[in-house]
Image (cartoon, rainbow, N blue to C red):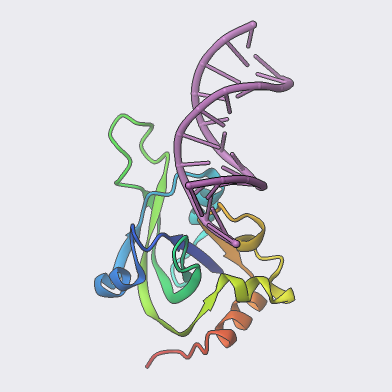
Length: 144
DNA sequence: GCCAACGTTGGC
DNA sequence: GCCAACGTTGGC
């Protein structure tokens, strides 16, 4: 399975809303690199949920439950159908200890993360090693 | 609130 | 096809 990180501004869509909704379409991606990453997601892949702008921390974990399909929030006539895509993600659990961006930047093993190197990319790949380390830093434990 | 990074647009 | 201008994102 692959690992990812998705970003959201809490003002637009927060982790609290994700938890309340449980399953949520991840829409509004309008960047070709991010789209490529969405297209590569498989059901069962996991992703960190990152709050940008205000909090700047990884706050939770979600699982991909529906692979890429045409983004319904694309306005009619604004482009060919399927020009942009979204996936559905399901809440897995909250980070017991949110991992702040500053901590990630202070960790040499995480300095090469796409999140750090390309700050504007809203859907980033995460390597297995990075995922394991971040789970450790966040005191993540599988629910159930 | 400012600024750097980056994508997009439009003139040539 | 190049590049300057502009808009957006997101960290600080």
